[in-house]
Every structure is written in structure tokens, then in C-alpha cells.
Length: 62
Image (cartoon, rainbow, N blue to C red; front, side, top):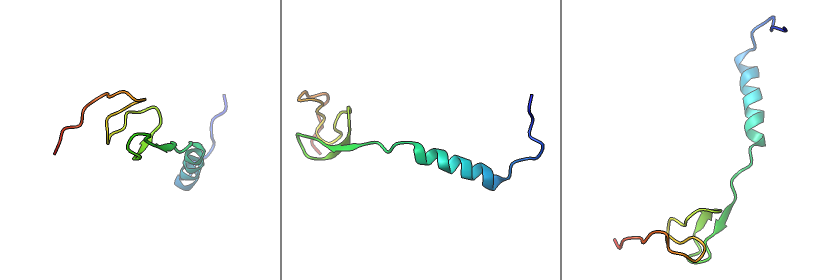
């Protein structure tokens, strides 16, 4: 079984990890059709509490 002869430097390790993080897609942010606030797709809107024209939770008045 192959074993590394020398230890990888911290710079090489960090360079590899940085390239991996670059390939991870950024989550897409859409506007809520009800209140026009930005929200993540397939999630309940934190501002109005609706998901697909259905009230999931009622936001209390401040």
C-alpha cells in the first residue's frame, strides 16, 4: 500500500481545501411571492411564515 514519503505542508493542505470549497454551489436565494423578502428555496419564509400559499406559523405582533 502506498504511503506518503514526506508530510504535506500546511499551505498545500489549505490549497486543496480551498479548491474543494470553490466547487460547492452557493445556495440560491429567491424572493417570497407573498412578501417579496429573500428566502431559501423549499423553505418557510421567515418574514411572513408562509410556504406555498399555506400558513405554516403565525408571526406574533411586536
